[in-house]
Image 1 (spheres, helix red, strand yellow):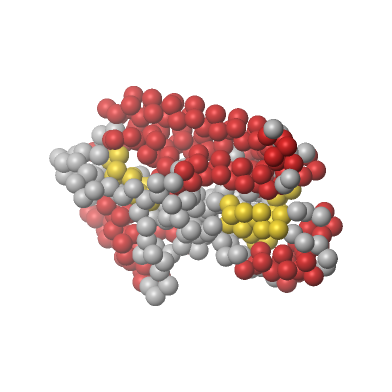
Image 2 (cartoon, helix red, strand yellow):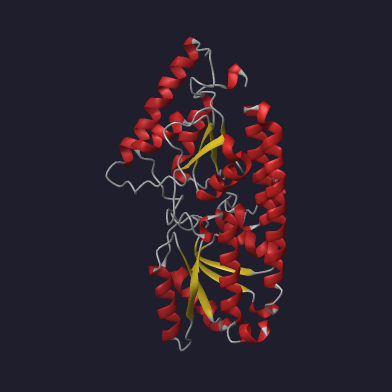
Length: 347
């Protein structure tokens, strides 16, 4: 490892450290800035969950801290037993609204490298990551390698890119490449190991992409309409041929007005959609309001099931992995929209 890249490395990994006066000041100022962010958040902090957090004695393993579980899953597949991965946000946690806790600050300071989504996924933490990056600690947005022309920028997003890139499995392969490249740069001696792991996982993602397309092919084109709590599934729609409507915008921090609810109710009734879907990390209240409004207009629409959008499932379950989460989503969507045709389709 290069000495210029060793801020935050533990003593068993790095024997010498170079601290210039300027760097000391920068680190101190960053610590103050981060603590100020935390101070403003106190009193409204969610419970913190560290998915697969490393034991106290991590030895020579690279300490990786991530935001959402999907990124932690990438880091584990690439890093294998050479990394100790901690995710700040667990099941049911909304990254758009997340506020860092004092414990999170410790985890970020203790990390050798930090991976986050970028594209304003972690809206309230952007300045924190930028400040940490200026200290020299690798702080990487996994979306950094994706070409801009492949990013969604719908007019309603007010000039911002859609951050939910994991819903297009091919784009998530780009995030895999980013994680692999930066881990290899951090530990060149482990580069062949990291590359082999990344190649193996890429094969699994290719199989997942094929599975999603195979399942969706069971749906007639006119049934490929997905209505969810917020606009997280746009990449899914573009990649796999769905018309997608969300009650809220790309971030759950956006306001939902009465007009938005009424417009969506009118859309559901006009198209006679059989079901709408809730999300594990978003309140169901607004979806229930849409459902009630449609029924008031004479159209009964079902809650089609719960989808994982901005957070994975519980650790130790299939949905607690990216591949398991994606398979659950497509199985739930296709099974619900096929309805009574699903059983005959499988016979």
